[in-house]
Image 1 (tube, rainbow, N blue to C red):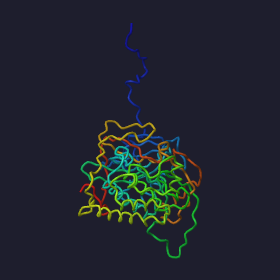
Image 2 (image 1 turned 90 degrees about the vertical axis):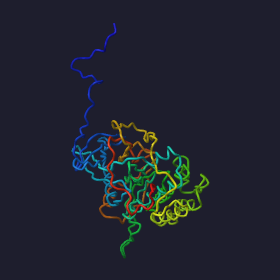
Image 3 (image 1 turned 120 degrees about the vertical axis):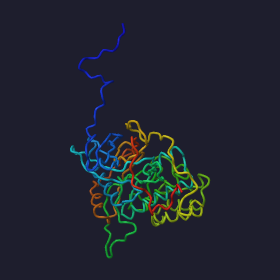
Image 4 (image 1 turned 45 degrees about the horizontal axis):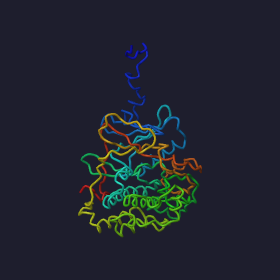
Length: 423
C-alpha cells in the first residue's frame, strides 16, 4: 500500500526548512546596514544596504573569497579613487570601500533603477536620431568631466552606459564601470611650465576588441581620444543597429586599425550628412584627427540638434519618446544569477570585477601617461605590470538585479544637462 513519504525523526525536511541566513545580512559597513542579498555573479555577490537613519539605499559588492588577489583588490581601489576624483552626476557614485573581517574587499555604490544601453539595443535594434543625440549628449558630459579629472575610461561599450528611470523623474544616464580606467594628464590641463613628460611605463591594457581604438590595439599611448573613438562606435551602433566592423575578435581588431568605416547613412535611413561627418571624425584612425575633446564633440552635437530641429527653446530634444523599459530585458549574462524576492522595481548595479561575464576582452602592453592627480595615480600604478592574453572572460560587467524598493538617487542633470528628453 502506498502511503505518505516517511521522514526521519530529528532530520530537518528540506522542503520545509528555512533558507540559510546569509551571515552578511544585518552587518553594518560604515554608514550602511546590509538588508538582503540581491544578486550573485561569477566573481562577487551583491547586496542591498540602507542607511538606518535617512533611509538612503546603496548596493554593496563583495568579492568572492576564492577569487581574491592583489590585482583584483587593486582594481576596486583604482575604480573607487577614479570615480571620486571625477564627481559628476552622470557617473555612478561610489560611497565607500574596505575589507570585511574575513579580508574580502567590498565596495558601496549607488543602486540604480533602469536598464543598460545594451539591453535597450537588444530589444529595439537601433535608436532614432533624437534618442541617439540625447544619449551622446549625456555621455559626453560625463566623459568631459572624467577627462578633466585625468581619467580615461578605456572600456566604453553599451553595457557600461546605463539609462536610469525613476518614477516621476526625468530620464538620465550614468556611465559605469571604471574598473580598468587609466589615470592620465587631464586633457584640458597642460603640464606645468618647464615640466617634461616622462616616457611612460609598460602596463596592462584591457578593453573590449569591438570598441577598442586603433592605438589601444597597437599597444600605443592611450588618452582621451581613445574614449572618443569608442563614442563613435556607440554612435554608429545606436544609429544603425550594428557596429561598423563585424567578425571574430581578430578580424574586428584588424579592421579597426586598417579599414575605413562606412558612413552610418549607408547602413540605415534618416541619418543626415552632419551626423555622418561627426561619427566618421570620431572613428578616425589617427587620434590627432579626432575632435579635440569630449566637450568639443558635445558642442558639435548640440549644433546638429539645432539644425535638425531636435532642440527646443531651452535646449530640450522634442523629436523622440524617452525610454520606458516596459519590456523585461533578456538575461544579460551567461553565469547563473539569483534574484531578489517579490521585486517591485528593476534596478541595476555595477558589480565590480565579475569574471566569466564578458564578451571578448584582451590584455595588451600599454604606455601609461605619467602625469595625473597624485592620489589616483598612486593607486593606478600599483596594478601589477604583466603582459598576458586573458581571453574573453576578464571583464567587469553590469549585473542585473531586482530590488524590493526603488533606488534613492542623487539628482541628475543640473546646469550641465543641456538636452532634456522630457521637455
